[in-house]
Length: 207
Image 1 (cartoon, rainbow, N blue to C red):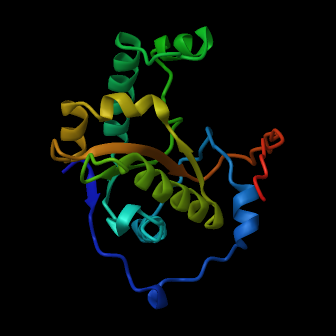
Image 2: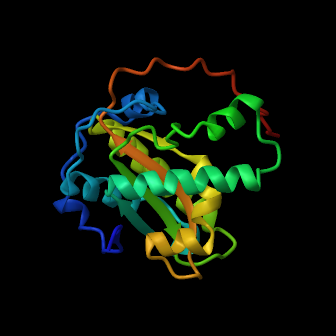
């Protein structure tokens, strides 16, 4: 198999290593990382991140996740090229800028930014809350990665092609599954500065 597929039961909470980072620190330190070193990420570490992902809430406790872990760099390059071709051929509505289109047209542009690992979180069903369930798991995974000193980035460019029959076949997924969250993981090449956050739009509703 070119992609390792983890669909394993999570370890009991008491058997899991404790996170070494305060939750608030992980939330405020997490960045979308787009430059990585060549250092591999061990399967034990990746399994810890997946276990953290499975602690997310899910609608009516379905826990419908599966995790496709792609470690083959040649395969990552193939997926990157296929995904770029797919987006250019059938661009999503409202593709934000000409700059993004030019990036996709560049044959040397790797949508995975040289990261050594891609984890695709999929739902085993395509029910009403499939996207929400997988998105909650993805946030847990990204925070756990931050706590482990790793960088992550959700690669939206990959979503369209991975949801096709060819994309699902690469991931070893049945037609009934829905790939939702393609997350790259690796060791950041350098610190990523914080992005200024807008003030939240809050409406207090009370008696």
